[in-house]
Length: 358
Image (tube, rainbow, N blue to C red; front, side):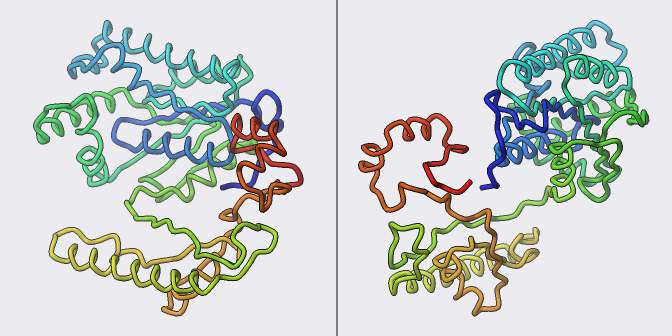
């Protein structure tokens, strides 16, 4: 969990204001992946964030539509899609103004300069700070992989033959390319993301949250990887946070069994993948163990370190300090701090019990 950020009664960080992130680019460039991933990151920071997908709005209102509706020369269809896109934009603005939101992510193509300028002007008029993220990809293999892995399984292609879906979506991309204008107005705050992270171009970006977005994009990846979660072993005083006790003998046995299990499991996965044409993620990425800075977590990782596996300690993985409820049972907490229990249920992420460190 990230460090707690200051929050006002409005639900916003006092120093950041409302921020709108607008995606730019033709289809199959990773815009939706970026939108959802950024939303999770913002929420992890404690920021109220939400994705507003133009594609989802269009499917809700029009269902699955033929490719003729994406033809730039089809003025009737273009007007209908613009109306839906504006409805999505209006909903995001309303959510940022009165819905308790702070970061709205407007997931759409927004391929023309006129459209982006209209979006920016509407946001600025409402005291919302815009940030445009343009996804550019000039590697056909990345685009094709994205189409095959994500797009043909979308609601637009339910029941389609995969190859027919690829051809249809490729045609849709070509229609958008015909109308596409890259961001050139240097007055815009924007980030250009080249080939899913190979290069970043940052322009006119200011503000705390906007800077966090840029930092996150610098570390964004689109390659699948596996993360294993495991509890720390049992310690001598498991009910007390303050004591920060060592592992018990049973906890040490658990640490050894955990190491043996993880290494055996990865070995089996690697052997199975060696018979297939695809290279395993386990072959490509070595194992790294992350722990909190608490004793029981660090000591649980000792058997991994003895095998030469890198072990890194991160304070953000620490258990939240329970403060005055340290050592109490749930029934005792409810009896002693009934109002705090209600506050914790209403806002579990930000709530802290008395004398707990933030």
